[in-house]
Length: 146
Image (cartoon, rainbow, N blue to C red; front, side):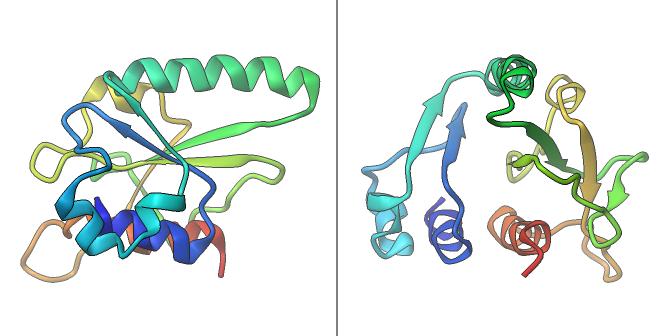
């Protein structure tokens, strides 16, 4: 998580949502890797990811009417229907919520149900996936269009 906090700071991410079994600050291992970013990047903890996503979708519908904030939920997961993150076009006038999963299990079908789009990072080597913090960093920078 420390690496994700640090990357979020570097990329100008406005908030991190921590869910489930994810450790939360203050935490020695997070702080060591985050190098302080865990102290100034806003974050919230939610026990159930699907409830958070459901609430974000609900607020998206309300806020779209109010023309304040539109939320587009992108899940980073390898599925048969995942789109290539490098070919994905971000919808205009949306705030992006990037959902990354557990290091071993990834994202559950329930969580994927709440995503507006599921994308993955192409893998050409022998390994099937990247470390979550590395994958999140690649996705954050790709989606921010730096």
